[in-house]
Image 1 (spheres, helix red, strand yellow):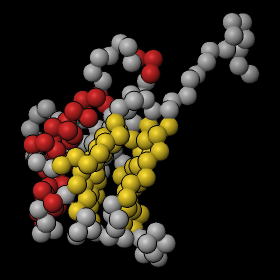
Image 2 (cartoon, rainbow, N blue to C red):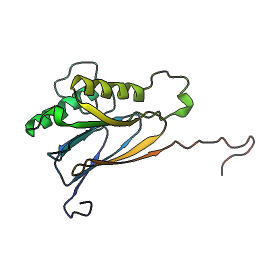
Image 3 (cartoon, rainbow, N blue to C red):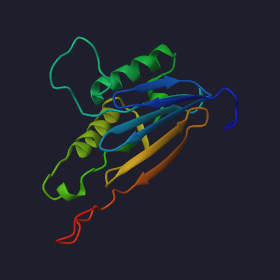
Image 4 (tube, helix red, strand yellow):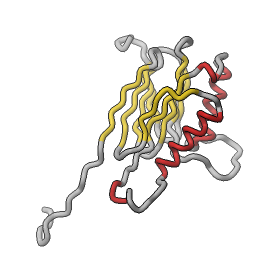
Amino acid sequence: MPNHPSIAEVYLKPGDYHFGGPYTRVRTLLGSCVSIVLWHPHARLGGMCHFMLPTRGRPASQRDGRYADEVMSLLCEAIALSGTRLAEYQARIFGGGHMFPGLAKTRRHHVGEQNIDAARRLLAENKIGCHGEHVGGFGHRNLIFDIWSGQIALKQTQPLAVQEPPAGKRPQ
């Protein structure tokens, strides 16, 4: 199926989400943000989000995909509209990396860890089984989700160390 001529490619930016059917490939690039991937193996439906923070912290008139709790609500609504049940989906969690290794020792619970905790909590609250996760660590992740098969491709890239030039030497 990867060479199917009508595969839709969807790229999620921070705050985006997508829910749909087969012949769709969803991609994103994650740092400290987190993606929850939901897949229905029998209906071949799936969704993915790219959230930035666990919660907004104050009420708002519209839900916003940048916040874990709000985007989960949007995904649950899309699932209900599809005629499937949330309990039938398999979930996976990705991201929550520490993007600044030099600060790792100074911050105990950085935003990536908060996002991971939020994703795990939301899956538990909604009684969705987590079938795997690739979270934390350093660097960013390139994530690709093929809805027709449920397959996920993941590449994690470690941050490069930037070295100071030797004393007395200036870059040209």
